[in-house]
Amino acid sequence: MISSASPQPAADAASPEVVIDVRDAYYAVGGRPIFSGLNLTVRRGRITAVMGPSGTGKTTLLRLITAQITADRGQLMAFGRDLATLSTAEVYGVRRRLGMLFQNGALLTDLDVFENVAFPVREHTDLPEALVRRLVLTKLQAVGLRGAAYLMPGELSGGMARRVALARAIVMDPEVLIYDEPFVGLDPISMGVIQRLIKHMNTALGITSIVVSHDVQELATIADDSYLLAAGRIAASGTPAELRASDSAAVRQFMTGAAEGPVAFHYPAPDYATQLLAADA
Amino acid sequence: MSNGSGNGVLFEGVRRLGAVTIFLGQLLAQCLPSLARPRLLVAQIYNTGARSLIIIMLSGLFVGMVLGLQGYELLQRFGSEEALGSAAALGLLKELGPVVTALLFAGRAGTALTSEIGLMRATDQLTAMEIMAVDPLRYVAAPRFLGGVLAMPLLAAIFSVIGLYGAQLIGVTLMGVDRGVFWSQMQDAVSMRNVTEGLVKSLVFGIACSLIAVHEGYHAEPTAAGVGLATTRTVVASSVIILLLDYVLTAAFLQG
Image 1 (cartoon, helix red, strand yellow):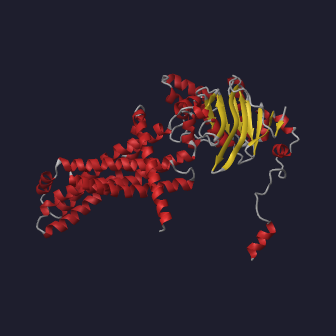
Image 2: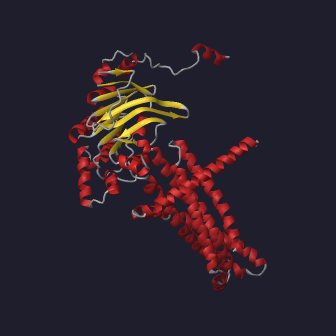
Image 3: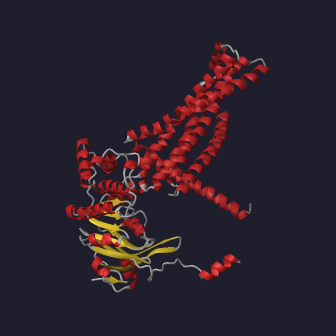
């Protein structure tokens, strides 16, 4: 059932079903609120899409979920633990259960593809080299880049870099995988590959996924739950089909990509004619 | 300058000093754990030290040659050109070796450190490490800091040795000072205390330069302009701090 303008009712964060739970979060930068009364729930084993126009704070939401920043007010629970109350070591413990795919891949430029994927394994375990090698090659095979194992990041295309980053993100078998704008700047083939991989990670490996993007069509085919972020809160939530069928003007504008609607095409500005004439004077 | 803006500059200066001090504490706490990956430290000693060798050796040679030329010109006025060896050695070991090496280090290795770490910040590499539960202070900052601290005294020593050969080249080969007198005068005039003074200076400069370079890169604004600005700040701040610390350390050694 679609919930428009009012967010989904807060789920029981202690329930094993709920992996991430954001309740009434408020976060401001320089006095300007980014989120005000934000509520969002991510359930285990599902693909949750967070959509919204550019500049609505989608990446900031990911920074909150990964405890890079802390909400000014409200509660953010990850795996049943309140992130605001955790020590640095405990935050690192939570992060080891997460994987994240960055928009630009964020591969370590001084390491080759193999070493990039092996990086978290080497840092967190003392596995023998033979096992590390097998593990890395298995993950690279999963993203179709076993043959590129010894290339440097600078030799990869954007789509390949993102697939390597995905292999790195899954190498420690995380419970939750977070994708930050995974489709941006990709050609249709790479986009389709990433789309299939997200679905594959979810169905084959059972990884809970959070996908932050504004690519409505791509998300609609893979997401189980969708949230539409606007004006610092969840404007609507439900399945992609429910969002598409919404009678809310704001939701319809975003889902159809219409230029006219509640989200104005023009940034607020003084009267056009007055400003032009003033420039002539 | 008005009082208000004067206070603002003072406040900003104190704030930055406090931030750098806290950062130094965090770095020192990560230095020991970072030794668990000696490969990283060796790589950084190579990057900051070995890759600075050519510029250090060339500069050392020319500074030594100028010292030989100027020293001979001055000393011969008093008929004491045989003291050229000791003058060159004391000048290089106590002052020119540590100071010029540190200034060159700030320009070559310091800027490289700042821009490298700043670009890692701008391309989300440091954030990616944090998300992978790897502390970038331990993996990125501490090995680079330690590498710089260890490389500086070695570079200063190489600078001084090459400089002495430069001074000998001019004084002995070109100006005709007796080779035996040149080296024996040096042996008589230079004590272990002089060598220690240069060593302590270069170690302190190494800490200051590496700290500034790593701090500026780590806290650079993640944009092209931000990284450029941080790199400039590294050179300016390092140069001023080196000269300031040189005065303080020289005064302290003279007192002691």
